[in-house]
Amino acid sequence: MKSSDYRQLKVWQKAMDLTTEIYKLVRLLPKDETYALSDQMRRAVVSIPSNIAEGQGRNSDKEFINFLSIARGSLWELETQLEICVRLGYIDSSLTPNVYNLTTEVSKMLNALANSLKSNA
Image (cartoon, rainbow, N blue to C red; front, side, top):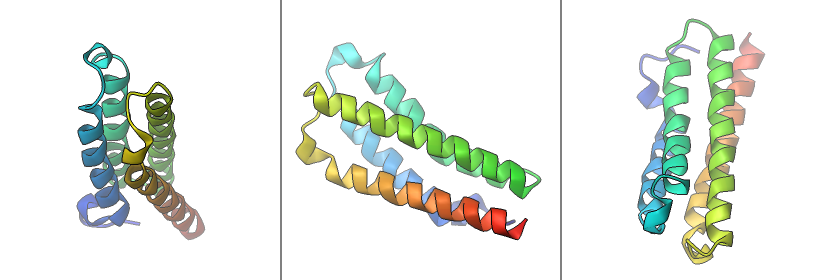
């Protein structure tokens, strides 16, 4: 699955939307979480579109599938960290539905792309 530009991938675009939303949310975290949850969440969410882009630039579908798997792992890591923030009362759950909808959408898109690549192999 070679495309001329990873930016054309809908899953990359959606992952970038998720990144923007998470960066907005982590601003709400307490200052003492700056180098803990906030930092981990930013790293996890940045990893998602970054791995999609890196995988698309690799030489084979097999390598791309591996990077999509890494992106999915980062997505689940992010969901866990977001849940921790809600349980600790750092972020009100009323602020999370859009983010959870984006994580679900990105997860489905990652799975669909990986499955498509596997069936073409």
